[in-house]
Image 1: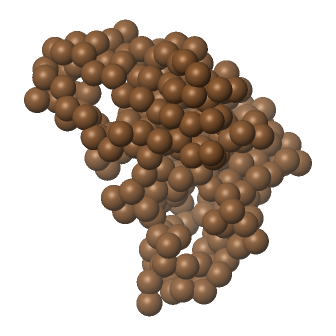
Image 2 (image 1 turned 90 degrees about the vertical axis):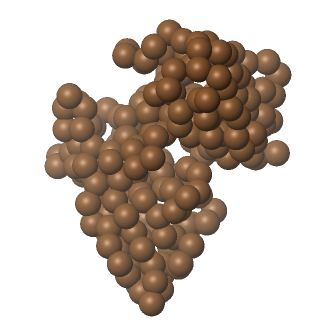
Length: 118
Length: 109
């Protein structure tokens, strides 16, 4: 069974940092592209970042570029999102999401809540 | 345009058919995937590619595309289909799946 389990969310003050993790199991993590997608409270889905299988190709949404860093450790079957200089508008549930060429995002974690507030 | 636009809300009588549309320039080049999201849950892939369903998705869900518009049709809507639905596509560069639609709330009456 494919499982993606996010962790690392919490309450942080504006300007602070958090590191999200996503533990993958039930599939060959190293051969899949991965994404982070977020959802502000009561709002729609927003793509945040993408990383290729090997980690050599990375993309970010303009809203997080220069503040967030995506990475992965294929030996540990883990995906990460380092979030710095957090703003109130970064508040939301962050999902780890597996991408397949044919179908797009075909698996999602349960999400981890990030709250940026003083 | 680098956006995907959906109607905010639609309603459908139980057992009837509803179509949800998604418009955007990138859809002229790339297929949309469709996701169902119920309150408090992660999104669930229901349609991808030209008109494919993942295992376990009922065949009352179908997809189509024409020009800059992708559509998701629920034929014979059930109470459990009440949810938010989002389309998703690659951005115009094709580099990543950076475009999500604005979302459509489907209410089953």
